[in-house]
Image (tube, rainbow, N blue to C red; front, side):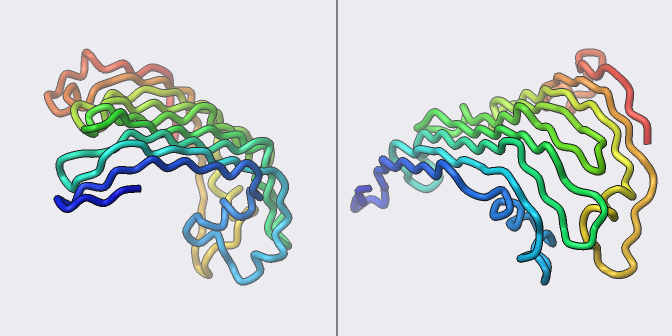
Length: 193
């Protein structure tokens, strides 16, 4: 890393964290870390890999980056809770080709997990994040909200009920939504609440 008099920072950073506990990653989710979190049963690992290369000058120049997070076959169960978060498989990738941020992208594929033996599968792609985001993806699965009360301790008085059933695919540009061009937006499938 180099610092210049004009405030520019030249970076060439690489990092790799090849084997970490899924439990450590899950603890970063708000309200997931509870007083009995040390007794949570967990299995599975996550990998973090990334690089940042190029110049940064606030508001003018941005480096290229490439971040990847992989979670494989993870499992997590809170003490005294009858259900678990199981079969978590996830790949998240964020990229940018500098020196601007017009080429930012975010990809999530696969997204898979099960709560109380009910699976959710999906993927998400967001391209051109800064100009006219192109958003596409799929989501399939059934969620019983009360299953989350069987998996994770909630604050006293919080109740969840109902269900969400999805089998959808979507593909659109942000500008299509802003201009009410709904006939150009791909949204297929069904979603029941």
